[in-house]
Amino acid sequence: MVKPLNEYSVLTFDCYGTLIDWESGIWDALQPLLMDIHQIDSANLTRNLVLGSFARHESTHQNNHPKMLYPELLANVHQLLADEFRIKTTDDMNQAFGHSVPHWPAFPDTADALRELAKHYKLVILSNIDNQGFAASNRKLGVTFDAVYTAEMIGSYKPADRNFKFMLKRLREDFGFEREDILHTAQSLHHDHVPARTHNLANAWIDRQNLAKKSSWGATAVVEERPRYDYLFPSLQAMANALEAELGRKG
Image (tube, rainbow, N blue to C red; front, side):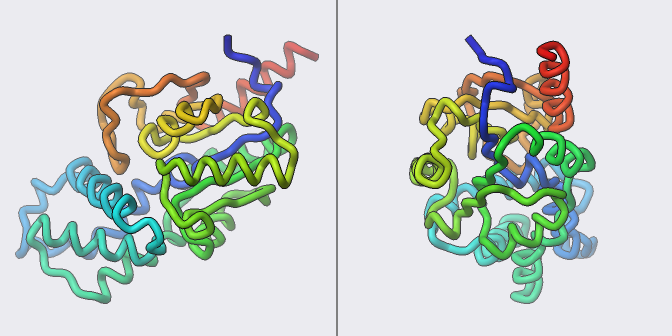
């Protein structure tokens, strides 16, 4: 039986796709590669097609190069996308894409919803990012997180078990939180919800892609067997509203 939202002590967040609109950020940062109409049939390179290719290359690269910093990984993915679509790129273009994370926008509801949630929970980041990249994104998020655990700190990328084991250990040692105190809050089934269920974590799916009703995976790898979830919300603000409604009933 799912317990009420207000009975958790800490929310552990994925950042990109959940708090930061990484699909819009990725798509915008790819435009210099995709804009040469003399090289490509741009009508065939739809957003969904390109983001799906990004997801495949990123996931493979993260698995094969767990210690590679995210800007370098993104630069390599940019080169792989250019190769796949037979478009000429340059090292400068690859590097520009690799360092595009600071330009990726936050979702419009993120900052306000986080400020509301921070009144009731400790807020923690578990993200597939480097430290510098997250610091740039954090300036858009409107709160100071109680802890930030990045792929750079851990030495691997989600959905690796190592990332969740690291987070659980640090939350126990640094804050005294146990597994039952934690609600893992994320968009990606592949990066977050599958491993969260493996580690017996309660989970809230922020389904910004509306995947519960359709199959448009965007920039996240496809999951053939979808994991269970304890809560489903279309946005972070919807989650904050649900919490406030609970507290109102309780009060």
